[in-house]
Image (cartoon, rainbow, N blue to C red; front, side, top):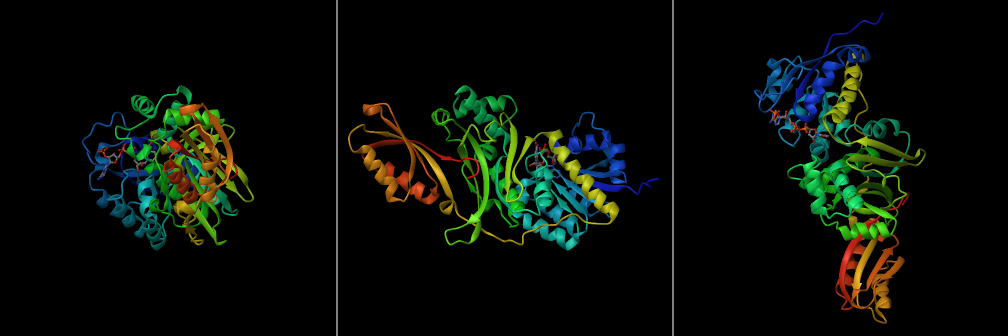
Length: 438
Ligand SMILES: NC(=O)c1ccc[n+]([C@@H]2O[C@H](COP(=O)([O-])OP(=O)(O)OC[C@H]3O[C@@H](n4cnc5c(N)ncnc54)[C@H](OP(=O)(O)O)[C@@H]3O)[C@@H](O)[C@H]2O)c1
């Protein structure tokens, strides 16, 4: 007969959208969790900002609430700290205190991990404690554990993802209805997919934090949010979406982390977040509404796709509970899970060095010699053209050009050159293009 060990005692920091679902799942699944871990899980305290706040029918003793998160973390009767508050400070202070004291930590705090994950990993190593954060990227989707465990025998070459549900909802809606950005954002806000201040989502900060976390795990290298090239999607127009459709493409806000040799032949990585046209045949093109999906390519594994709900209280709490079972099992068995792997320490390339492809639309004068002059502007920067299409005649003539891959700096310099040419009335759209397996 299995003997049940003493309870694994939890300090829960935060009891909002995610934290309240963690409490609910711990209550509703208590028996199964005990059987899976070999010991019961017991919440010994919950830190919140407003302890007197009404929390509906949350199945928890009101006496557990406190505003003193640091005091809770320091308690001797706490084994595991679950942080679902967010932000850099005071969360970093709490988690460093916990980890250095040998307490396992589970956090959903992508902002902190992307800004200063190194401090947390160092504290975990110093304290011999587990640091798990599956919920920090792509909500319910099991993605970080596969990267940090299942794929550790392989070499990951590229991770391409839709990791922000708000922007995917907006872009899917623009694609389906032909609406402009503002109209689609308004709809997303009304339906609860966008926050009152959508900056972190639409400007790509949220996706950039997740890109840093994914790149760190995929390439065994410490990558911070500051290393990630970030361009939001507020400038994507209904015209861009229509242009993409004409090419058999759709526009997605992508996070792309890739590994490969740089111009000097040294292995390096690039990490970026920006809107991009992708062919409708690409596995990420059909990811609609607020869903997330991440496409991982490994040398031996080939192509893998992870898909599901990237946010929301219950889906995110599912990821937290998965981590909780893992760290509680480790405590019961007296072991520790996989720690940080940052041995490769690869250089992170600038966006200028990163090979990309551009789709460029130009309003041009429709007269002899214009096409040759435009083609020369590309050649001047060593950029080769894949396709050219002319639409309209006379003053309405539009040239739509798709390039082959070239260093992003060369493409960007080409666009600057085009803007200065007298026969180019306007550069109406510039968008990067990503194809499968590039
Ligand atoms: N929501 C999602 O779908 C989602 C998905 C993935 C990851 N995450 C991450 O999960 C974390 C929590 O997100 P959330 O949506 O659950 O946030 P939330 O609903 O705003 O909840 C935040 C919680 O933290 C508490 N809190 C705030 N400041 C505090 C302080 N100084 N001391 C103690 N408690 C404090 C709040 O207390 P009161 O209840 O008293 O206000 C509240 O319970 C964030 O890191 C977020 O990025 C969220």
